Length: 576
Image (cartoon, rainbow, N blue to C red; front, side, top):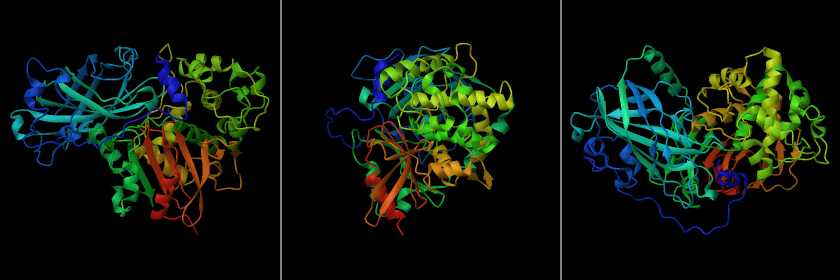
């Protein structure tokens, strides 16, 4: 296991190493006819290695305005084998890190789109020596006159590790005929990962692909579901349509450590999502709706609070007072967990020994491969002098204890074979249109369903993150249905008299309420309380009193949110 990958992820503040000021990407864009990724380059008998192709502007992977409709439909199975990645990094690679994983994916086409039949994460650990699992998104098919008898396709994909949930944003492209496919060229040049462990990675590979044309009996259902999901997206407009001075846009584009520090930035005002173009170090990402983001501890709010608020609505708010020891037998005799409730655990006030240091997280939780191993490891942690509810102490292990306890709580309520996250998916995520929301689970040796880690590992698209944020902002209500416990949701967002817990001067925020941080920011007109989800690297989902919601996903450790809040307040003020 790559230890310093995880150790880097545990430090909140980035290392102080010197970074040369980057320059904006200004590489050659796609021309007509194209000079890169031509049909000949993709189909010659002796396919050139990836090192013969320089990293390209992302326009080479997207359907150009001058493209024609695809000559051929595409319906079938595409299979890849493990392939060496060109991935220059200034350290020894982790085992399998430079291997693009072998996997199989089914595609159909509809109205110029290349649609994966299954959109779930593809776990490759059983058939590949790669470090990576894969999520495939919807792409495009088209025809370029210079391609002759070939049609052309591209699709987005995300590579993610199995330990912390980093996201490598990639795009792949190929040409095809009715029964034939070329090699597939893939390039990745944006990520949400651990930048302090040399994680900036421009990755590429030429992949041999095996294609088996197939007709699918459920194709109409696949297309119908795809169309429904597209219609359910939060309405999106360019951010400059509301940010007419481009102040917010310039903020998102400002240099931090690379020429593309922020994967995506957006603001929701009056239920409309205003999005800054998602960027990579080699131009704009061509499939912004499909781009996934490793949001690290944002997961605690986006998944942990979401789950507990849902079950408080389903079973009653007394679940917050349920003793952890009643539902986690391994902790029943542990002195530190006596009197600790579900609510204490969500609020990081358990009084149990734990922290984000390696000995309390890496060795205890991250390296554990199954739920039982993780909970037994947690049982070895000691006790702090403070009792439950007395002092804030941030520790990701608390959230795995909550996940384990939730599973046993729901099993007692619903019966054997019922998984709590399945209920959250069915009754919260699916109704709001976020059914493809991906979350890191434990890996069970017997192949059984793992438990969500809840502390980290969410991989949302911007649309999914926006929908979950809007659900919280609307006090847990969606389309007239109360999906989350209203009062608990309002408490989290600072809309009640309950102030939550002081963080004791923690740099990340002043107060902590049900996994949400809060602090105050002085604007030109007044002082604003900002409530937010926060994740390693500078991932933020901000809730402002005006009702505006801000989403910023990045990994370059910009934790100063005051400038961003001030710029958003200029668009919609929270002041009287």
